[in-house]
Image 1 (tube, rainbow, N blue to C red):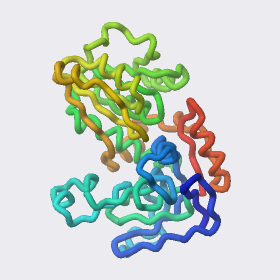
Image 2 (cartoon, helix red, strand yellow):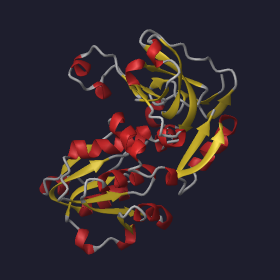
Image 3 (cartoon, helix red, strand yellow):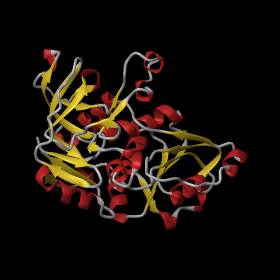
Image 4 (cartoon, rainbow, N blue to C red):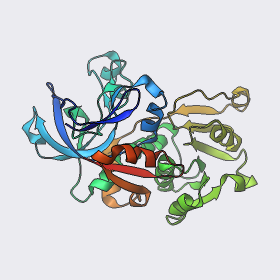
Length: 319
């Protein structure tokens, strides 16, 4: 099969082995996949991954041990847990010490004609959700994890730092909570997407002084030291600072102030797919405005070049 394979460099392979599903697994024909910043970070050395990239996708089940899944359009959770360790038995499969991760850690991903996933990871896509919308299910689920972890109340003041793809999704999700929300970024055109949804937004250089040390919750979606520094400036004493980006490299920060201010630092990763699909089905988030461009798999190298361009939003790849 055709696949985008990362080794020392990214290449298009025309004869990559088609995955063979094992017991309890499904073979999914990929209809559409999205390039995530994590894919770009892998190419900078993150996780040391080698293989087929891609973990945001929608496709159709072509083979499965459970015939009820055959022919169904699905999205899939990316953490493939063992299902029997103490962590899995405790209901925390995303932290299974034996897990592999689709397109990220020892499990070939979705920039290919086919991808293999456990049946337990599959979620059926509602008929009213298009492929272009469904491909956002994974990052939207990650955005939904934030209010779950940070216990955000509608009376609180919240800031989202970063106007990339994830930051725009996070801001839209938190806006649904009724909080006093401000999104902060570097690109007027991206912030305009949020303003059209009624979300207050400003450039990094125009942050109101009223937000300084005044936000109950700040979400850093930048993956950059300067983004963390801005988030730290905005969070109030005993507030919560949520770190939402994975990236290659180390972020050297001064944590003494966080200790003095008793700030809670929360790492946040994957989230619940079912409510993400419900939001898409009900049209409560705008993902169409986040689509930058679409390429066929044969032009996958060009797609990654576009995705790496400063300011680019979601680039899609269609096998």
